[in-house]
Length: 424
Image 1: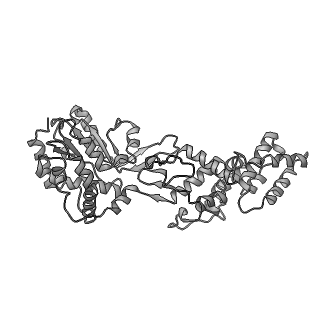
Image 2: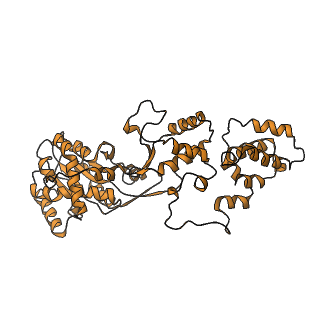
Image 3: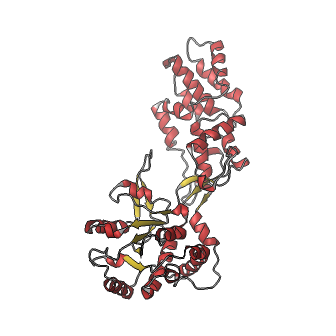
């Protein structure tokens, strides 16, 4: 492919700077693909000979000047190829192009040959495999992560495992130490491919690990740990809240538009309890402006999002919340992203308030599940029993338990709101 692109460019049409850059790009992307460098050099010498004033000494001097590598590569060479050759290099020849069967996944192929392409050398891909660099892709948070310390990590913390721009720089330097001199484009391409060959979901992996001990705790969760005073209603919604979280983990974007509302005095641990249930990395106690694109992006990688102080919200704001809760696919464009993202929602919502006067009307309030917390929440007990609560909820989820209120249960919820004077 590199040879094809080079031959489509006439050296007679280039000035010295363009000749130099074309040579650098060709050498960078042609070497290291199971082709002997002398053969690559011979092809280049033949190309240079098309220039009437070709100087063999100047050729040799220029070629050797790139012994230590160059930042130019396949992108430059392809962009300067003739338009018909460029199209074939990008899309393939319509007569000979082979289509993979519909069931084939290119990421299941070895990191060699066609999958790697010209921007990533076979040597580079081989090093990822042979040195088992611990790079993975977190499907829940939708990001590349380090699953273990990299060779350059001096201070390792699990929470700092996100793959960063600095890691790319260190990785390129690491390859240089192993006598490879890839461009940054090649480093990034190889890293992305390698990460997606090691995909994982920390939430569903956790749910698969926990094992229920057979002791029932789920129905009484809000009553036992949150000291819910409206016990009958609390027992109704307690399992549905956790089962709904599990449904959003296994079925992102599934219908889940209800909000658990924790009422109680300030300082009793409402936000802390929600944090314990979700886990530090998957909880947020804030929600950006729901009319702004940042709100959709903020939800990515979260399991519980807290809506604070419903009592301070006006009628229009409560209506905005209802519409926002009904969204199942979040659409946004990430920073520096080229294409918009459509991401099925994984987060569920909970709210905290110090007041019991916050539902501005009784239309659509089936989405609000109020629980009155009579005293300090048992954070220690919640931490202790968290795994068992989820294990029991997973058991029920697998038995097709619902996470929504039935028609009769919605009537109970409406009565609870009236009795508790939540509608104002």
